[in-house]
Amino acid sequence: MLKIEDIAHKAKLFRDARDWSQFHSAKNLIASISIEASELLETCQWLTDAEVERKIDDESFKREIAHECADVLIYLILLADRVGIDLLAAAADKIDTNEERYPVDKARGTSKKYDQL
Image 1: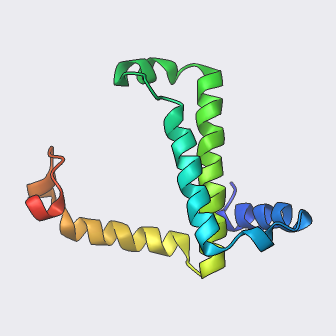
Image 2: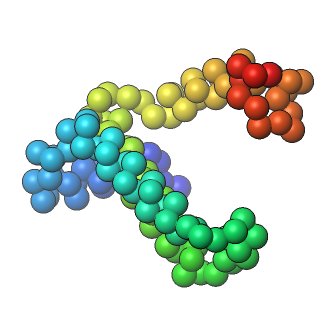
């Protein structure tokens, strides 16, 4: 099973072989994450929820989604490396924060934001 460190190492080798780190400022990486997330969104633009759910079983659609998710993840890993963030620790911390903000007895079954519960 791959670890986040394995992907980070592979992404940095790819980047460094092309001398692209000069373009990977924190601002540019943040922009790239947003751009790639938009490309992920584009995979289901104009489709209904039901249409997307039906397409999930289509291997070419799944591959397209996988590639866009990978682009987001790679840029996110490079950003975390650039600014010195442990992504897994940050994610665990955020889940803990959300546990406090969205207690089960108040948040179950509702999409309200924590300040509206």
